[in-house]
Image 1 (cartoon, helix red, strand yellow):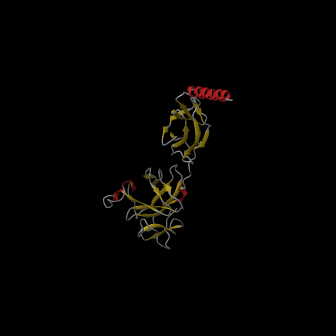
Image 2 (image 1 turned 45 degrees about the vertical axis):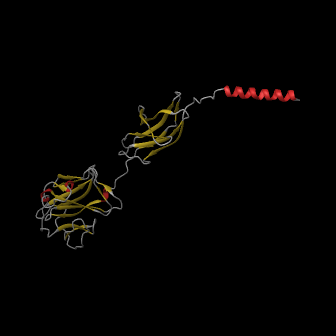
Image 3 (image 1 turned 135 degrees about the vertical axis):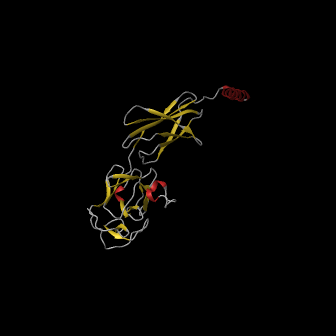
Length: 275
């Protein structure tokens, strides 16, 4: 019986020694690419797209890249930067409207193995801007101002919106100019600049504005679609104050008291001579 126990103990000891002498196998397969997201979720032509992925590997990731192609064209790539934990991010550049972008992520580890994710797709789509909600709301040849009103329920980016006076462009909205819903934008003649030192530089229009003669003031979208047109072709009366819309933002043009940057006042006297 002692002999059996002795032999069993020797066998166990030999197994333990053999096991301790063996080296652990080092994983040499590819990295694991986990959850992939991109932002913004609705991409416009003004957006770069930030791609985020979770990439893990026991040996360590040596490189991670985004590979993308636009409208089935040649493949391009951008590097990804490691953030907290296993998070990696990279940026796909802005693309034109209606572009279809397909992208995948590759990751290489210290063993030289490369992992590639499944391909994802997004389509660039310009969000329509409701320029049709912009109107000329008040014109004043005495105080030399033009007022634009947003009669809609959402803000409008004015970039590229422009005004013509008597067929000549006199003002174009700057890149970051917007107009909130129900808000007014007040533009003064450049001739009033000395009197209006605190008025923003970008909100002066070229030339003047008279209450004593025929005039045409037109508002256009960036693509030259006519948004509003005040066309006084037959001058019949000196405006006592402003040419105003009544009711505010819509309806007919009337002679009314000046209300720059505020709601127009009621009036029943229609502007005569308009086309």
